[in-house]
Image (cartoon, rainbow over all chains, first blue to last red; front, side):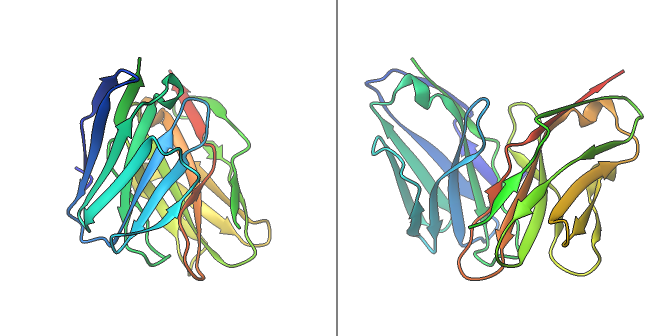
Length: 113
Length: 114
């Protein structure tokens, strides 16, 4: 149990579907992150929320839409995805201060067909 | 901006042998350093971290790492590996000035065979 829970663990969706990934943390952290992990590629930081405000968006396509309704929850809304979006999507949380590590969820394995 | 280099994408080793996974970083300011491990189909788990003080840091599962400021390195070591150590290992840095996020290396796959 890492303190960061992601659902679902696996998701298969068609290119015309709309789905959402959910992340929940009970660690009292004030920053949350979405990462994309594709085969043979380094971890890509997609979005950062600090104190429920989006502070970083690393040129992610608009078919990915994040939402952070409170400091404990983070969503990633997906629509009209492409097969190359298939990947492991990892959520993480941390305190905003630099001398702290991030805690990761177990990820959602997304397959776009 | 900071960056992390893990030169070895894959390191094969026999069980009970020692191992070193290399990590070098680049940053114009001081950094905090981390090693994470990822088992198949799992998230990342913190192995150890260097924040300040002693340059030799001990972590979980018998791993340790040494911070070398002059060589900008933070290599991970274990004196005797087990089959269960087979996993991907990520080095990461976070600057200690202003707003910063973790920057990860590309990862090193440690393959332990009997």
